[in-house]
Length: 124
Length: 191
Image (cartoon, rainbow over all chains, first blue to last red; front, side, top):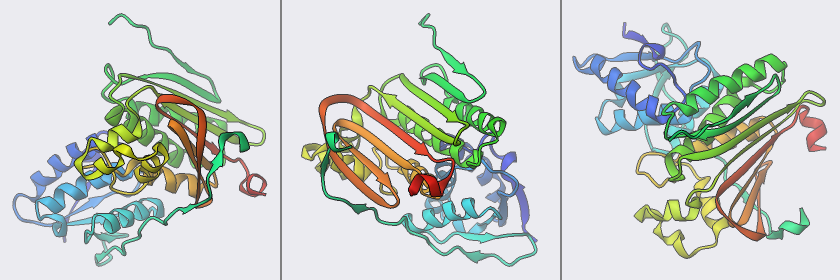
């Protein structure tokens, strides 16, 4: 069974890209031995897309992304990971619980905005 | 610097002059305070979603405005439960910021609204790593049935229900001014 690392052990806050960078540096220490780990995002609500993106970008650049399973049960956080998978063209593995086999998250692109005709500020 | 900065917090509001130079952790700090205010008000709006949206906006300013100060205002109206958020800075603005990245240099001669719309796209940023802040904010605004309005230079854009509107203003402002309105009751607001 993979080692489970709570995200709170890697970063004091999970709201910004800067914290994501710090979390990655701590996470990679656990990956040096070549083992796979599960990054536990459960029970943590304030996880921003920037925080997650910084971890994913670094893992992808280091060719370590497939060594990490994101443990996530919050639909909002799962959507953030799915967005990242789409625009970073990344294969990101996730599971809802440690007893569940991991699977690649389905990329979910952001919806395109429909542009309405130009209006003037005075119209508003 | 000796400059006194002001943070005013009540049960339903937060007004702050955001000082990036002195506070490395300003986005984290404000994120937690916003969450506490929303929990205290009993708002129907998800405190975490709103707190993260504001955190992303403050962090955007910190990363890209090239200024040390920005203003943040948050006001919750118990009846009917609407929340208004405003963040503004006097920095370099979206067009100049994005155009400083060679990949987005084409924006340099384009209208401000084009740069603003481009900035809303995932992965678009002045920096090689970045471009997720507005994606998170737009998802939050959509989930909560709200509207985002953004002014930069002499133009504005607004986004509501997946549609973007844009137009000219009668003045040219430095930096970026952004306002988010979140309704207490989705059906009433969208009626």
